[in-house]
Image (cartoon, rainbow, N blue to C red; front, side):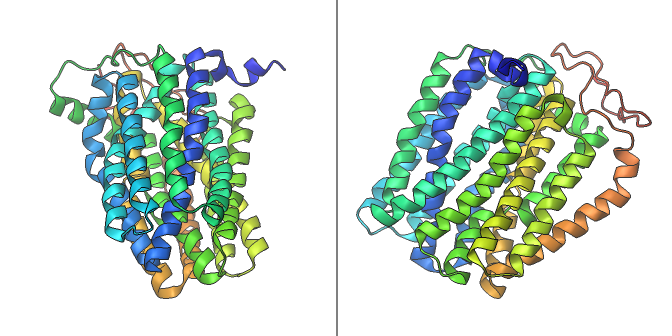
Length: 440
């Protein structure tokens, strides 16, 4: 079959530019993630303090997400992203400067993490909403979200692997330096793009009215609410791998930096496999409740199994399954929310998703850091996995029959920006148009 038919998102020149720039920049991001976690553990020898760092870095998303949505819908997304990429590069350069002398202090890393977090609170929901402007039809949106997951997780494989070697050979500061340089690629790609030069049309009301309008739309759609609940529980309680894997590596398995990088890359292999599968699966792998729950159970069960053993190679194998389940779940939820969102609401819906998926991280980071500090990183994996199994089982029993019964597609029938009636179809037995969904 023609590759363009398999990967319809690549029909768009703008998306091809975005994919190329991000593929370089995301490797740099994972270099920095790897170096930053290892640096904090070397400075403090404390998973809890690593959790505090992660909490501070993601706290701005928790505080600011509700205010970011209308901004994304009001201003050109390309301009917003150009600003955030430049600021990311400056923050990474600052981290490199404070570490090159060999006298980095924990508080300095905290301050730079907080600045990076403020940038991310703007950047993440913007890039999620930007997908709909890079491509034009539903199949291309589904494919673009899957491809975004694929390139993110390819970077998750490459970045930590290179990062572990760099740390061992030339030192931690070079992971931050290369990340700062990597942003040049995505900045150039944005400058060459045509998409996102104009703001998405929204309501003519005030800023506060647009927040209320978005809140009513989300609250009135049971499917969106259910997806946000799943995301808002799984993310803070299970997806704390930036704390658990370095803690498990250094304090449980007593590995060096290259072994830690290998385990991070193993998880990336599973995540990459999920992304590739969904990218090439086309409409056969559009999100469904069965796929969402299935990927969640793969993640949770694999975490339980990591927690009951201490073998390096078995840990790597199980982290492949963790990565697969995590990437499949996040991609399915992301795509489903994109498909449920009319253009004029997409920025606000994706800001809500950012709030629960990313903004909840400060809570999860403190939880993970504390449990790893008190009981060991292996128990962090085990307890989190058990919580995931119990939660997904409860959702499957009590929520699915009422909200997801008979659901064949998450797509809305009309996602135009014109503000007409929005219906969800075809659902077979579920009227998803709860009060508040049909809006002018």
